Length: 122
Image 1: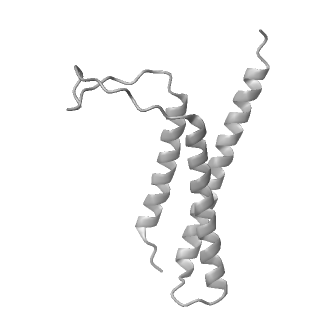
Image 2 (image 1 turned 90 degrees about the vertical axis):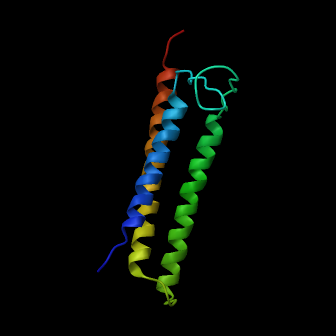
Image 3 (image 1 turned 180 degrees about the vertical axis):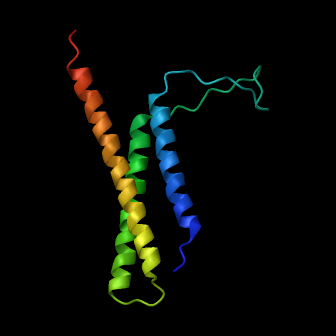
């Protein structure tokens, strides 16, 4: 039984992307200003503003896409469609599971932060 390493890398890549999105959302520091050549100095561009809601929406859409892909592969395998490999079905299922678990953890952290802010006495 052979398992493609490329699929494991993309799962890791997805987790790194989700972590970087969370870090970007939590960042309190200002980015280093650079010019067009990537060096600090004149001709400074305004940094691109990223809205948290857009990051969250994008992450949810990616998780939904992985779940739909997993569901489609599973249905194809169960229907006996040719060219559907059980290894691909299991890898897609695990990707979907990991992505959903990460999204749940993100939701739990957001809910905890909301509760902490709500309990602050003014």
